[in-house]
Length: 262
Image 1 (spheres, rainbow, N blue to C red):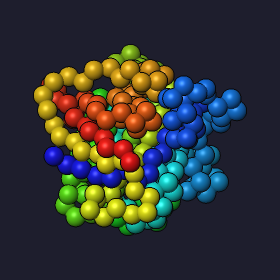
Image 2 (cartoon, rainbow, N blue to C red):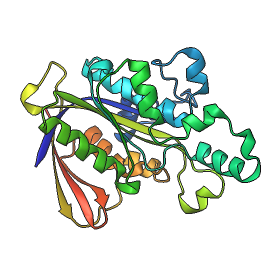
Image 3 (cartoon, rainbow, N blue to C red):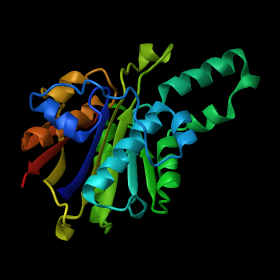
């Protein structure tokens, strides 16, 4: 069994641009009426903020929010970025341009097409020299990212940043890898034996056999079309102070999660 203290939480989706807004919605509140249509990650310079893909913007926005909630220096944390598909809009652009006009590929879009684009922007923006991991395991991406973060804690790191995010699919890819909306969520996880001033719920996790059910919380129901929605039962449980859930962790496997709230 692996464990961690959740020191900080970040969240962004259209209409719910913060963890405070998401938590209120999960407990029966309404969406934020004047919420921005796109996250604006303060970690980036203004020109980079405008040019960054939406997936990068949402990942950096929630990552910074989680670090601020935890009272942690972003530059001091190793990080794990989990996304099912990376940026599908840019992947669609790359494929269609290579098929029709290969000499017109945009260098900027090319470097944003890699799966670790968000992790790269994060390390540059935060000035982080600590290891950054980018991983994909389709529906199991967040659970596998959580396992990776917990293992890093067990191996000796004091705290680890975990980020899950996905955007909308476009073009022919949408027919084989559907994803709608824009969603990001992040946790700062710390070793249970090194609780700091911002200590929060204690998380324990272990692998088991089975299939994870569909989340029945309000956040899960609202974002059901996004490829990262599989992570939302954890955030619904954090909002409602529930203590048990399961996340899809791969073929026939689930990650059992137990929460002990303060």
